[in-house]
Length: 412
Image (cartoon, rainbow, N blue to C red):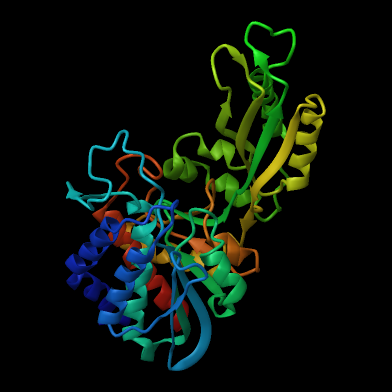
């Protein structure tokens, strides 16, 4: 029996243990905000300790502990990093038909907040680390596991902190299990540019509209004008264009019909509008918060220039930057892509396609440092919505693919 066959046999033998760990992980509440992940951290730490796997804690904020575990193989070689986050979106109870913190297994599906985003992928990283530690005498190089606490708010106390302060987590390649769909591998992602537009006018009595413009009416006009940013053309790198074209159908399957149309385009989402005090008062204040997503080949400065052109027509409005992360990408035909494709196809018959994702992940932080970082995880079913879930088959497909691919990378 080959090493890879032995690994698959071990996973099959431990099937119930792996599923039970994942379900228990989902039951541990770790919504961010507020972001206190100490209970989830303890859950992972208890498992690793029981396996005899040492780790250390990095907690720049007490309620945001991060876990780092690492081992060296017998022979020198490359350094692979496994990354997953343990925080999840908050729960809006509207629409849920299952307990969002129940980890229920119903008809082959595991339900709960964080099931796909991303406790399935983080569980895959944890078990990959365990299985490869057992065969470290057959590997070359180093394997590092990072379980971070602050991905949902862009990682100032999570992966971003580790990358900036703990260089041992950088490595030569990163493998991540964020939701992607088992038919795709994410090699890049769009960049979020979050802004706030604050509108101020004198305001006044609702009957005296001749005395003051309405901040909310200005907001309504402004929202329509902001659509101009979506007409800004992209100029992606030449080596990315073929991958984007070839991935169109896979992108639609993984992220919903129409996703392939907006991957290469600037998108605008008006996330929040707040203004006004009373129906018969002219609003003197209004605030708009917008999420602009930049594709590969569009610079923040280009967007900002268009925004200032719009705001020049509205002296009552001031611009505030809330957050920005540039688009990121690595080689869509890199070695880890080939490894993942080969293993996924052998396991399921489906060869995943390299794509650029709409949403952001911690993988971007490694790409910013020219370290190839790839995402292979379950479908994003219910992500950020209600009845979030992952099928057992998809979950185990991700576990098997990560284990075999990490082995391939560290045994070559």
